[in-house]
Length: 105
Image (cartoon, rainbow, N blue to C red; front, top):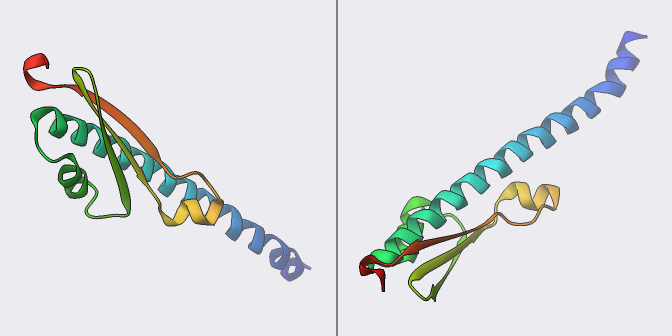
């Protein structure tokens, strides 16, 4: 009897564990993208290449970087795709950060 009950519950436990691990990894990806956007915005505000700063921060992971100037602010949008997003059909992590340009203009 115990064997049948274990055979029924083990697949469910495996699926739940895999889903929790994937959600944790997806959260870590979001933290990484948010951090990279901040680094990229500060680099753009200094006049450096924000794409290079983001690439160095994310260790070359699959990221998309877009840069925009909004008056006296330099803004950077970063998005990345990772395995958890494909596994759970989640939207890709995305972050936007803006920094005041050096010299105020």
